[in-house]
Length: 151
Image (tube, rainbow, N blue to C red):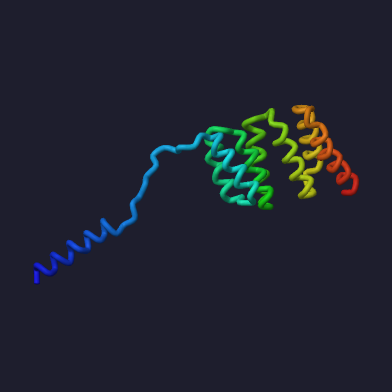
């Protein structure tokens, strides 16, 4: 009886070790922050926003520009409060990032709120990067139109 019991215990332990799936443990991230950012862009283009967000968060540990990308991905998921948070983080960490100012202005336009702040943000974007005047001017014009129609 004891022999049968020890044989059963041994075969159970053997199955535990031989039947288990092998596990690979990665101790350090093999991707650079730039690679995470690029992978996030690829996911975003495919509409896989949750995967994009995951990659952007990894990139944001070293690349502050990833906050802008996080804002954009959340905006596309219609998670506007999260988008606003990340646009503000992008502006705080990279105060020269005109796209962050413009995108936050656009977010306020879409929400139909904070239109005075939105106008200021769009003007700041124009000031920071005149080479994108056409894009930023479009945002500014739409905000000003909406301001006229809102009492």
